[in-house]
Length: 217
Length: 296
Image 1 (spheres, rainbow over the protein chains, first blue to last red):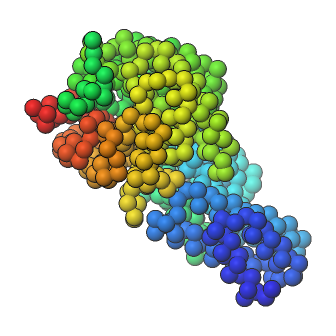
Image 2: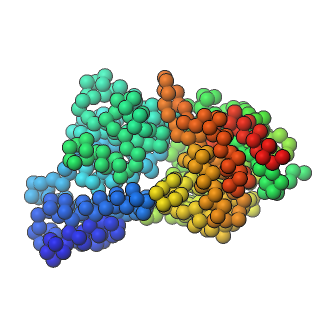
Image 3: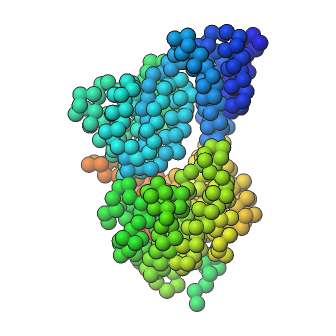
């Protein structure tokens, strides 16, 4: 198949959340010795963007987002090792550390944001839920992340988002990281008040924001 | 002899209570601790919250067991105590209830997704909910309320799990978001489909709670009324949380804003009303005055 035939099929596989098709098409691209970065940017990425649009329009819901993100991950699992072999990287967005702050066990929203960020080309380190604030900083330093994403569902735990920013400041690390906050009680106003770099209302918006903040759009 | 709760709703609007977790936190429940543990460690404080709601005029108190299914308790290492914690939750509300008032056994979501989005099978969820219901039923609740459900499949599993061990009436509230094409759960379930499937599964009452503010709730309840003839229940949030001075949490709807829409919610068809996040006994006291006026 030519690029012109393959790329729309790749996009369709992501929109349909079809893991098997996304994987097979990625294998075809590798076998055909295509430019894999072009395959990602023109084949798969338009698919995940379309998924985001469908979500915003109220056509897609969480199951579709998850299926599409999984299909994207499956394709990337084929493409990434090949890119590495060619000394290239698909992670245009850089590294992101994400987790639900300590005291809070809610992880549905956080998991979705993590999946969508990964599908959006970020290298994601998901620390899980109820994560000690220290741990976010340790991990970000360890992997050389550029961004830290903090989730909180409870009004009582969202104040830990503010505390993390304080910790970063105390250590002179504040300017090293973009800090994004999310979760039901968070808001743009809250992000501004605590001095975070941004707030996103949902996973689709989070990917857009992360791309903007990392200079990709 | 107290008449069954569903029969009471045929004679007048029935009032549930408001938020529970934040009331416990106001009494010192540490952040991050499972509220259910207080059913055995601080029973007098749990009873005190129920008593405050009853004295505000609530007809029904919901038990301190929202996170009491074993899958959810497992996040705190408490899964082995599911029966004990739910039994205690029911007993405490029962003890706080004056004669002629009611206790609803609260059953929240597991926090786990069903396959393919998550690790659980429907059988896993049914078994977990059944465990919780055994405790609640033995502790003496009058009805069960499966609440804040964002996945119809999980809500249905909760109804089947409850049915497998108990004949108590089951109320179900889903949490709907206002989306471009109407009201949907997180998983994309519509009001109409939720109502229809829960009714065939044997739910005794259907409705919406959480997420929506009281003005939006009236519209959502109208959508529920178009979808089903089941008795309806509505428990709105007091708007959205905002962080005020010194980290104090406030909600965007004041008490006056919130209760202003209660008559609309009742007229839209809710026979049962109560509060959710951001409400407290003062909201329930104000709602009690309103529903009594509406009825008389």
